Image 1 (tube, rainbow, N blue to C red):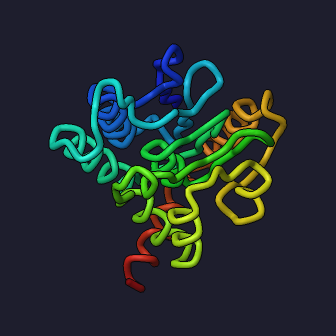
Image 2 (cartoon, rainbow, N blue to C red):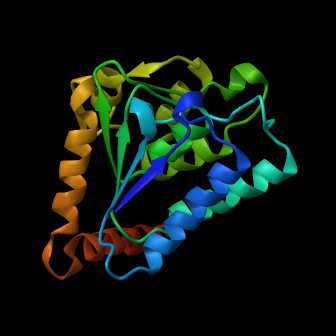
Length: 202
């Protein structure tokens, strides 16, 4: 199943309806027994430029509530989630990319956690960085506020694979289809076993 961030004219910048629809799509995918893996990507060759600051402001109650619900859905999502990071994943969008189980990036695509430069915290980026990586990685990524390009993302373990930019979506699609084809929902069983083990060791 494909879930697409679809505002290419705005580099898929996030609005309240987009965040709400993404959370709903994840919920539908979770409940649909025919879905055994999900591919998440942006339309038009860009993952997402982050919050659309022409429409929303970080910290406003409505967007904060929508984002909290989205990340609750991401945390509870029990099926393999493959992300295709084309071009950019900035701030709030970076948190969504980091939440993916397997992330494919382009050689020139980048991830940026730059909220500190805006004077705001990055709670969801911090959440995924600490859940899946470590304190050192979280400090480096959130305090430096610098673009991390494909080679850096691969080297630091944020990405599973790096491809020429024009091949990112194809590679991510291939991986999602492979996971979806595992017999007896093998990808789902494996992810749930890993998550259950992690919770037991919290």
